[in-house]
Image (cartoon, rainbow, N blue to C red; front, side, top):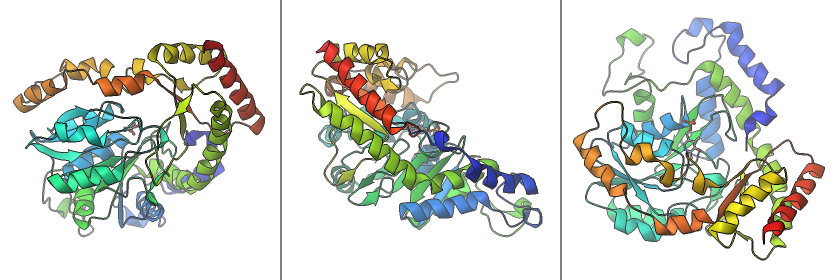
Length: 396
Ligand SMILES: *Cc1c(COP(=O)(O)O)cnc(C)c1O
């Protein structure tokens, strides 16, 4: 998955353009910038690649989620449904607009279980935010029909699955708004950065204003611009955008390397009857950023994860025990450890999450995810495949 593995002269050239002019900011300074608008260019490229009308780049994936929520009009006391398995950014973004994250079970897709969602919906629910974890996707068709039935907004977190498709559409472009992270370990990196895609003119217009203090971006004098609504600063710098331009051009190549390496590993593990694979929803095509497997039990999964490490297989994750990605270890959220006072609505709303999510535990307890790297030689992947097989068979 990590785009940094392919960092090279292409990125250096784009950054050099910015260094040559010294204009590090995306707005203003037109006479000095030698015609370079890197953030704007990255937005055009991203919209183009994702087949959406609009794209907005911002300072991180977390910022992308925050701006998307804000653009959708989500605010104080609104509830947003999110999965138990994700990155902490999901609830951070929801809380930061004053809304309440409502945790909901996942299934064997490792993403939101459509069957569990009805029970999470209340009169305060405003949006469903599926997270396409580890290179594959949520059952977007089912989620969309729930959203239509309840008049909810669908915001896709595609931070870990850029390049995957559902119903022949790039992830992020199926819902009302889609979000990407370009942080250092993501498939496309800017160092730090993020992107939002949408086909809605209204959301796109809100996004460019909101991420820049509410500036209307009319005319050439920033000091004279009006502010139709409150915003914040989530701007991306020209330096970061420059890296992203070169990285995004490499996406197709990255996806084909991932698919090749993934397939070698998967074919090897298919020989072990106890190993099964994460379900990909019908019409979905993975980005192959991770290979996700199930072992028969929690105990065997934990042992297998240890055995993989002992056999020298790095970058395999047992999320069930992980502090960043699974609800069981989010005590700062569940115990409401906030530096400042949380709103009454959030304090009360968060209590809904203090329960056990049995179905999530069943699937996550059995899941091991292995990162697919780009710089492995074919020989290294073959060796890795046979070592993985050996490690797993040593436990069974
Ligand atoms: C990385 C990530 C984010 C946040 O992105 P940052 O750019 O690190 O803020 C959000 N959601 C998921 C699923 C991620 O993996």
